[in-house]
Image 1 (cartoon, rainbow, N blue to C red):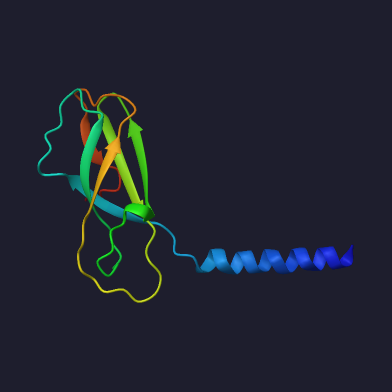
Image 2: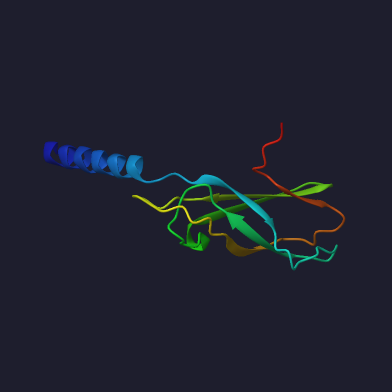
Length: 118
């Protein structure tokens, strides 16, 4: 019984260290793909994502989390990106991505949920 408690404590401590060292997702900025003009019937929104951390030219596709909030007047898209670990060069790469809406855009405004306003 005591051995089991010790093993559990060691494993829990190891997991805590790994989780603390793992990079947390950071807010990213996005803009509409310049070739796209939203229509009321749009359910696919092509965007271009720019992460805040340096990534040595790597696309953020596999590290992104997307959150979409709907209201009567706005569809707010929030993107976060888990940064790469270690030293990275800053190359300003943007990642193309298509956000799937669960309902048509309608007459609502598309906004960046992470945008900072003065």
